[in-house]
Length: 230
Image (cartoon, rainbow, N blue to C red; front, side, top):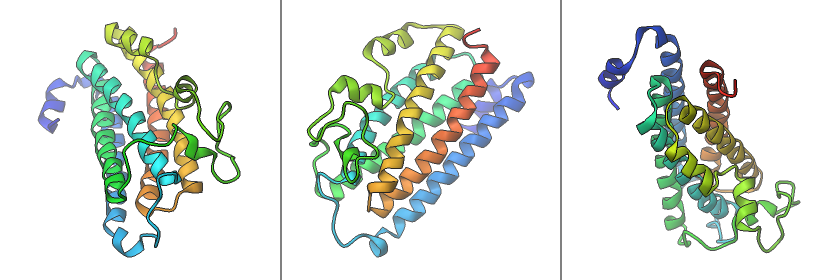
């Protein structure tokens, strides 16, 4: 979205909030640029052993692609629906930044010579001392429904509700679903930081954890402004 389009859609009374979101977006881009810079040195810092199909690095890349895909879908749904300029800019930033990260994770698996699917969802988090394993996870698999809940992902019914919602109700439902979605991603990033070995994956996990923590705070602020739950 161009700066001109942002200016054309903004309203003067909401400018301070709008600029807060723009600053947040710039910080997100800066974090992504840092991660990309880390990627450029991968050849010199790569571990001697390419991550295996059962590694935390590969599991994170697979599961987070699925996680990001739903975030992109929800963000674009509210981007098309909302009349709130601040939320519209915020949703666009989520969609574009997570689409780029999703592409990067796909590329990691290609470069490692691994399938884009394979191991049970979240099974990689039970490696090591099992500190990051969620309730209900076994060494074999977690049910699809338990994995969805553990990852903070929306159900099919919730996605349908979001698609059908309009006005402030849609804005508040999106914020509720996306906060929960982000809260599910942070433990996954923490698990990779403890269990992973690939420099590119570790850099993205750190950036993701910091960025999504900041975005949760921003969305909670928007919930208050929009009087969600009031």
